[in-house]
Image 1 (tube, rainbow, N blue to C red):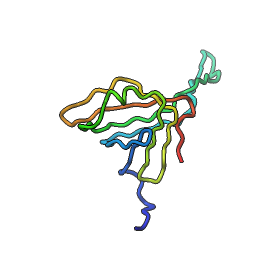
Image 2 (image 1 turned 60 degrees about the vertical axis):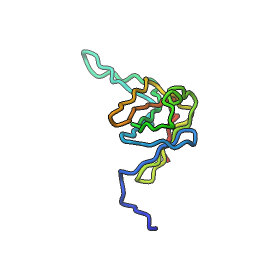
Image 3 (image 1 turned 120 degrees about the vertical axis):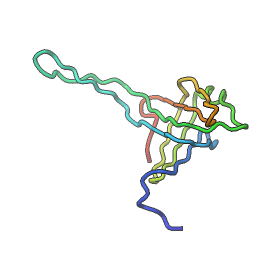
Image 4 (image 1 turned 180 degrees about the horizontal axis):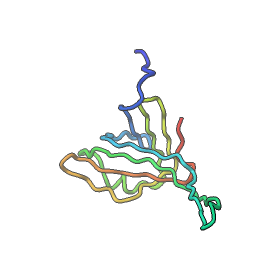
Length: 124
């Protein structure tokens, strides 16, 4: 099968600790390690402050009979991997879930967000 070098978006796959999950939509990631804020005075721009920013991967997943949403909420040291249509592989190491997962029963979907230390998410 020929490789499609023009594909930029669309198909994506998500695994956590080697387990595949049904990715419904909205996979996002953040590889930034710092957040900067401009500091202005009354006379001029003085510079900026800088704070560490957590790495982040999030997605909307599909609920299924064999899936335990509680087990996702319990994740505290997980490796999250996204394989994207453009060939990139996004890896988050030592990730934990944040927020509370709420299942929307009409579509059997729920949102999950993992965060980790600054620099914990890389793109290859």
